[in-house]
Length: 500
Ligand SMILES: CC(=O)N[C@H]1[C@@H](OP(=O)(O)OP(=O)(O)OC[C@H]2O[C@@H](n3ccc(=O)[nH]c3=O)[C@H](O)[C@@H]2O)O[C@H](CO)[C@@H](O)[C@@H]1O[C@H](C)C(=O)N[C@@H](C)C(=O)N[C@H](CCC(=O)O)C(=O)O
Ligand SMILES: Nc1ncnc2c1ncn2[C@@H]1O[C@H](COP(=O)(O)OP(=O)(O)OP(=O)(O)O)[C@@H](O)[C@H]1O
Ligand SMILES: N[C@H](CCC[C@H](N)C(=O)O)C(=O)O
Ligand SMILES: [Mg+2]
Image (cartoon, rainbow, N blue to C red; front, top):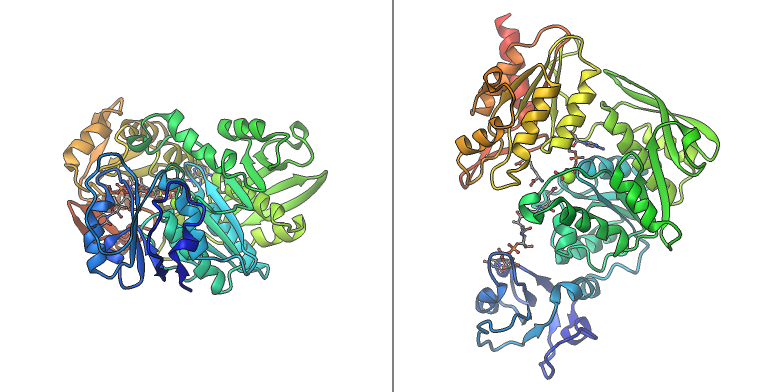
């Protein structure tokens, strides 16, 4: 439904007065997406100011332009209203929420942040709620919508306009809950401004994205905003993580209800902490005892990996915060299935006597978690193939190498989305982290590296192909080459079987 521009901008600070009112049907940050009836929002980006594209937007049919005020910038002449707004990132969420209003239907919103586990928890939550009669969609790395019918997304957390537009769209299609991943970039760039979170979840905090945030402190500060600035009704916090403990302390006694979860001993925690103990992991999944309010419950699920127990506990915490009874939540969580590319078992048949796994670990913390988790399933060699993305946090490269060397028996390093960087440079950043680089196999061609790993697997071994998970392409230069680790594993297994 279209809205008058004056209504969208009502109360926005620093608006130039005396503009002609316009009826706005849609709004966008990208001049290339503008068509008739649009409001073009020109932001001061990290590369350039969107105002450069205001004339193009007008030519494409924009009926007005608002722009993030910056002193001394060249302002183009337009024949449509062109309105400067000071500190536009702070008001844009509110403006978008007015145009894409979804307040006419109840919509619970859960935000999930943390270095690793956001996609997993958001999908577990949506799967679990839907298994118990709910209607929960996701917004995140794997796409937008029902977890079984996702539309592709370009970002983990879309820009602030797209966030509100998608929330409206999902609500209109009948979703009554949305589990959305909130990345640190999103928090820093105010992409979730104007979203009222019922629940916010912290999975964990290790290191990533220091290319963008600069320091671990700045990265943590961005993550903390979801809890300390957005003030969700409930905060579901991981007490196994130091940052989770810190947030719990900061929120204690505040208007935000803290729902802590932990893997540990129930006698060490308060009765309202969700505690998982007596965990058991096997090839088919995991089980544990969950203690809450002095009662014990059996939890089981057919997902691999001890870190997934933590993800399931976060899911339980969210369901309880949303008003589910613990029995219903436990029952629902028991039904969740593996999330695409997250510790996903890939095999040609049941009889394979070694385990082959594709996983999206692309941080030192995630690689450590997945290798440690897989050790439990390994009675012989643990073989690890990994690489590091180009144009991303270079500091994590030697750290991932050190983790792989410490926790795997055979390490094969390969390319993972070199983007615009030279793969040889990425490789030398990685190999600088090995104590014994001579023991490591280097194979830039990812397909060949996967074959090498699978070919040397024997009974009791585990082969981990890390870094790309669900991804469908290898990004080299500006080109996207179709590539799926799972498909490559299957091909390598088939070649091996044919040769046997
Ligand atoms: C570093 C970063 O996050 N950048 C985001 C930011 O871009 P920017 O500030 O650099 O924008 P810019 O290139 O200077 O352009 C300024 C403005 O001009 C506009 N423009 C530009 C060109 C044009 O022809 N017309 C036009 O209107 C742009 O839309 C923009 O609003 O705003 C853009 C518009 O919303 C985003 O697309 C862009 O994401 C880039 C592509 C990106 O790669 N982001 C990644 C790092 C990211 O956000 N990742 C996180 C975390 C991933 C995870 O850990 O899961 C995510 O949430 O996806
Ligand atoms: N709770 C967890 N603790 C530690 N590692 C985890 C956890 N959950 C998942 N991982 C690891 O991190 C990888 C990525 O998981 P997932 O996609 O759920 O995280 P994410 O936070 O959404 O990542 P991204 O920031 O890229 O979107 C997994 O493949 C696994 O190796
Ligand atoms: N959301 C992550 C994805 C990394 C995946 C990995 N395959 C790579 O390209 O580095 C990022 O943008 O840092
Ligand atoms: Mg994700």
